[in-house]
Image 1 (spheres, rainbow, N blue to C red):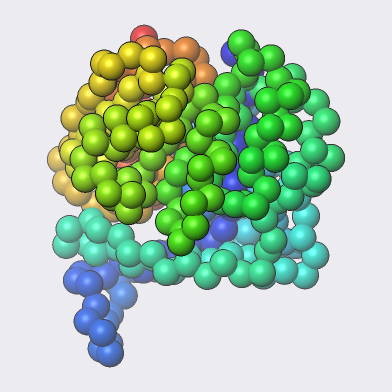
Image 2: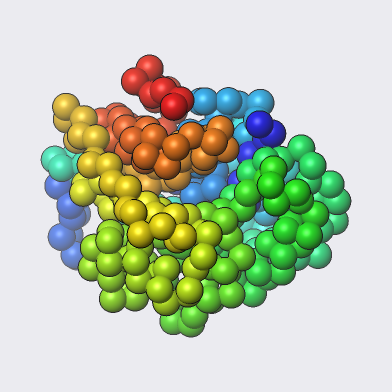
Length: 303
């Protein structure tokens, strides 16, 4: 298999660990605070890199010379293809992790870094032959369809697959142009519920029917309930229950861990059932520890 290219956000996460979630207009003691690398795409690559660092490539719009961001990218050993931004502020997420139950709450400051344009992507990737999987974090709403269409024109569709994550909820139907272009779509629980689907199976069948999908693989992770998937050409739905750690510690990045590990096994052409099985294991393992680095992957197997 070739390399996996992940396109999306790389930012800073300032993570605050508290004993209980703060009340509005109150003072709350933070017991520990750390600054880590964040952003869905960067998190995907942090997990992917623990399976195969050499085959993982992140493409992100980044400010020039942000010392903390550069330090963390180096520490995480990420292979990054940059779309440089001059004198822009790095996006920052302020995260609250409740140590009593492991929940996370995120306040995201977007900064002023513009999204990657189709022109920038085309200039940076004149040759895509080294990649066998290209994954897009569903953001860049105005240009993403053009970028995917460019990729589809450049790749061998039998060798390289394209996937998209649908997580960002907006008050316009940006995703309608994207869904028919992807080989695989990952649909979050919040995104599904926003469209009126209240279960994994409702979401999977609803997307297949609403968009008249033929060959697309639809994958729906649903947190503590597990994950389901379906290949549109078949009525069969695959399901895997959630993998629960001994103690719930920190759920920040669990969904990104699921997608990152799923990409690895999809790229290695595992069965869809095995993709789900391993992805929920990785996501559950992550929930039993702080952060995304140094995950225990010895329980994971290709199949």
